[in-house]
Image (cartoon, rainbow, N blue to C red):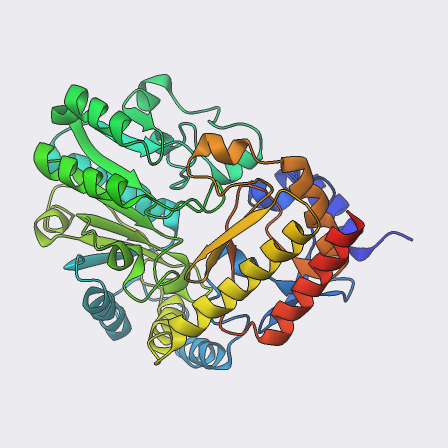
Length: 426
């Protein structure tokens, strides 16, 4: 008998390219067909066939409070009753902008947008307008949205899809982008020595999450900050994934590095489509309507999205929130590692705040090349075996995972028990 999941996927492929609206959802990396979800609550999701899963994707990071948190849902419902969009300023936009600026000291002014891609693209344009330069630097394996300038050896969906760049990107556009190795201090210094006076901006995930989780070395981030200051380049932290996920002050607070611009998304929307970019006042003042760099969006600062985001940002400030989140995430990664190693399987894991990475490797990777050397086939076997047992990890060996505040000891223990059964039979 054909499942409802299978039926929907077959129908979707007729009217949606690949049957999905974002490539990584297609299961191309792990094989098989994607799961169509019907509802979520807390740490669990249910597919259209009624099967439940413990969810470690969390809509790819936004759901730090879990699915359908009652306070967030209530805020969305109440705001919706007064209208879905106005295309005009609202008081709530001011409130969330002030909150973001108060929580992140490097952000003196902020502009709300609708997606991480839009925020990243706008931050790059702003940096070029501010400096009058064209070149930008990014790092192999980091993904910053599908802007032409940034789809150069990109990670995340493009990497999973087996095409680390993209057709349709003009060569002359890509030619302005310098791609370096993550955590490579000498390569960074060499390229700044050669091109420093031409570099408008460096954009980086301060903790990489789109080639699986790769942590930065302190020397790498400190050198990056020093070089950008020395050569007058704008340092952009892409905290779409890490923003309010690895700590209340984000990755920049965790590593004590102050970027010039910050790109935010995911958590700040509370599950609704919202993102932002902000930073030093003198740079942000280059934006229209006060400056010459144009950026606009009909649904920017959408009141329903702002309501969800505001509620989320208020709840994550509760005492002990991040300590509990980090403890649960450590419990997961430590338990998985112990189980795999007990059975002689080359496996390791790490976590930072509420993010984690799983690697079928003897050592934790520190670069794109080391991530690519992990056993992808072993991950695919593990993914499907866990999916069969009702545990939903990201359908790609190149993505970080996420724990929410609604994951309890029960969910973690059930996950570890399922993994141990799999490793035992491995």
